[in-house]
Length: 308
Ligand SMILES: NC(=O)c1ccc[n+]([C@@H]2O[C@H](COP(=O)([O-])OP(=O)(O)OC[C@H]3O[C@@H](n4cnc5c(N)ncnc54)[C@H](OP(=O)(O)O)[C@@H]3O)[C@@H](O)[C@H]2O)c1
Image (tube, rainbow, N blue to C red; front, side):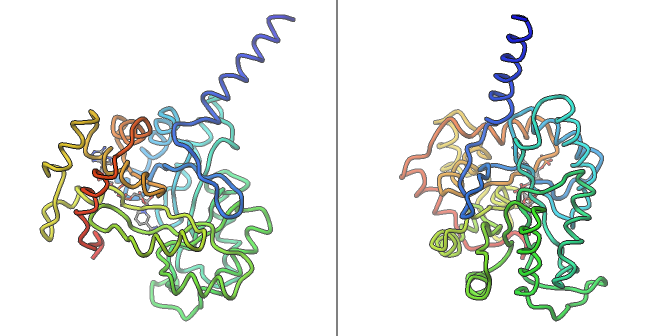
């Protein structure tokens, strides 16, 4: 009997330590749900079957948040990874935060819930934690522009939330004017806007606008800063100012870049297919940058998107 009680207590403790905690702190969204401040980005895996392995590595390393999208065509492999980590007892479903996105060719109101159901079926889940409209622009199946107002799309997103298929709903690549149109004409304020933010595209105004509206910001392509170094005269990972900061904390430049975004209360989504980098990228919660160091990081802004 004593053995059983001890065993149950051990597994309960193991779950608290390994499952619920994760490595990243969480932030409260405007609907009361908690979102982990760091997610595994999953766009651009050359080898989609490696995605499953990467999800396993990420959860072992302490990630609890995965960012995917219908567009990435990797939801099935991610679903297998999620099933692995739950089966192995590393986490329970409720410990995980899964974000996926509605692609542009499913913007008609009646298409939203079926599109989410398709994503859920690929992921092997009953619900996602966050569902985003990937972009305000609608397209037809052949990629040509479609004349569908994103307010219609948002109504479909609200239905998805009401049905419990998405715990939180939000947008991606929306500007302030578009967000304000949603707020003015809808019942639910987006919980999140996912936009490109990194040191060379710091997006101060857009971030401020979101925060003033109580909307959390997810920073995509957070490492765009040095991955595209050299282009358009952008400084890169060899810049002595960043190297100095990295040396001071015994961290890598990547970790300094992620920390700079986290200090701004942004949720970061670094993508890596390599185990040692997946581990490196979450090892950013044991130090802080000083206001002076934040000011140095700010000097790298050139309002340059890596997608232009
Ligand atoms: N909503 C949207 O429209 C949108 C658009 C773009 C991206 N996203 C999301 O944001 C995520 C991240 O953005 P991203 O994939 O564009 O770029 P990113 O995460 O900023 O950078 C990824 C690149 O950095 C490399 N890398 C990762 N960790 C590294 C490290 N520690 N040291 C050196 N290099 C490292 C990766 O290579 P390896 O894989 O070889 O390590 C890859 O080449 C995406 O995966 C996706 O989930 C959303």
